[in-house]
Every structure is written in C-alpha cells, then in structure tokens.
Amino acid sequence: MKLDLELLCGAGGAEVRGLDLSKPLAPETLTALRRALADHCVLLFRDQKLEPDSQKAFARQFGPLAETPFIKPLEGHPEMMRVVREPDEKKKLNFGGRWHSDLTFQVEPVLGTVLYSRESPAVGGDTLWTNQMLAFDALSPGMQRMLESLTVMHSAKRSYGPQGTYADDDLKGMRINASELALKETPHPCVRTHPENGRKILFINWVYAIRFQDMTEEESTPLLEFLNRHSQRPEFQIRFRWTKGALAFWDNRSTQHLAVNDYAGYRRVMDRVTIAGDKPFFTPA
Ligand code: OGA
Ligand code: MN
Image (cartoon, rainbow, N blue to C red):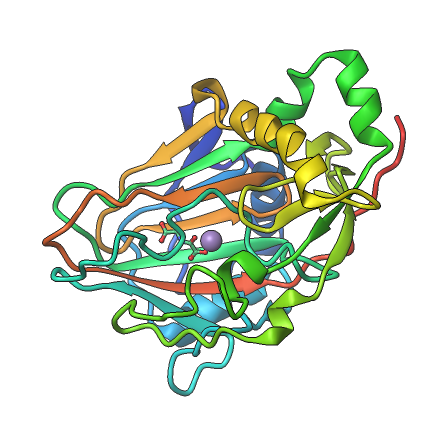
C-alpha cells in the first residue's frame, strides 16, 4: 500500500492526501500510516469533516484512547478536550505554548495525539514540532553514551501543580484543575528506543522533564537546558499552518511540540484526543 505523501520539512512532517478520515480505513492503509507516523513524526490531513465521534473513531484505529488529567473534557466525551483561545484573551501564555510532549509525566505516556482544527486564525497559530530522533543522532558519541545511562524524572508540577503555570486558571473556555496530584514524579529513560522503527530518541522536554534521577533540579538544569536548546534547532523542526478542517496526528514518543502564540484577535478552536502508549524503554543497539 503506497500513501500519497508530500514531505513538508527536512526534519519530517508528511501531508497525506486522498483519505477521508470520517470513514473506517482499510487494514493496509492503517499499517502504512503507522509506518509513516514513525518515520515522519507528524502526519497532516487537510479538508476533513469530522465530529467528536468520528474523530475518536479515527484515532481508535491506532489504539485505545487515553484521558487527559487536570483538564475538563468536552461535555459527553471524556477522552476529548477542546483547546480554545478567544480573540480577547490577554493572558501571555496560550495552552501548549511552551515546548513539551503530551503527558510524559505518566508511566505510559501517550503514543500519539490527534488534533483537529474547527476554527483557525486567518494567519498565525501554527504548531511546531521537533524531531527528537534527529536531535539524538546529532549529539556527540560521548554525550550519547552518557545520556543512555541516565534516567529522567518527569512531573506535571510546573503546569498543573499548586504553584504551576495554570494554577491561576484564566484561560477562557478551558477548565484546568491544578492539584497536589501533579507533584508526583515518574522516571523514564533519557534515551528511549522507538518501539516501531528501533531508532533512538532523546526523550526529554522543557515542561515535564524536571531533573535527572538521584540529582537535584539545580544540578540537572544546566544539562537539561542544553538538551532542550539543542532539540529546538531549526533543522530539527517541523511547522504546520492550520486551515479549518485540517488534522494533525503526531508521534508523541519522538517529538516535542509548541503552539505558537501569535494570533491575538483571532479565535482558535481545536479538538484533541490522545492514543494510549507503552512504557518507554531503552535497548542498547
Ligand atoms: C495539545 C497542544 C498545540 C496546539 O493539544 O496538546 O499542545 O497547537 N496543542 O494547539
Ligand atoms: Mn500538547
């Protein structure tokens, strides 16, 4: 099965043409999409006509859906949330506005996220991703060896803890419940193996990867800052301009992402579901 693909950036991103995602896909199409997702990190589909039920049905073909803690789901759809920004929102930070991967504070972070545009700004509001396989490959052998021996503690505290960014929730239209539960820390290997293509992934992100195991945050921050800056190099980035009806399906195991906050005055409405993933592991090559 050959997909009709257009590659978007050197780092990845592939626009897939000719598929209607509101209908069930053939098993060979799903296999090809899974493979393309692992290789290109982000799959993009334009001009789709989806409702919450059909978006969930599309995502379920890749695995069971996962629920998002701390954020109120869409009414009647516990596995879906609506990412909304109103034209008059003054808050400096938009939802998803700092580099992160979704839900890496969980023991089994999600495999992927499916984001569908219901309403897009005329200009601005793009999403950026980084390819963390390329980011790993570009490090020196000495740094790679050292990182392969390290474990990183992930936590939601900087976002959803009592002192977190969203604790004084004034993102209109989204209900965020900051909580003590966000203080919990979960260990993951600093370098994880992609379960489908075997590539090595630099598995850290700016928001949830807070320190190395058995080290303080203060000790860990200089190296984590370097690794995050390194990950954000332009040649590892993928960028997508949204149009109403576009859908992005990203591999959350091998990417970080960020919602660009450059569209004051416009409304932006996205529906999001996530697909359950496995526990990150590292197998030395
Ligand atoms: C998300 C997210 C990015 C965006 O929904 O997880 O980070 O561009 N969104 O809205
Ligand atoms: Mn996100």
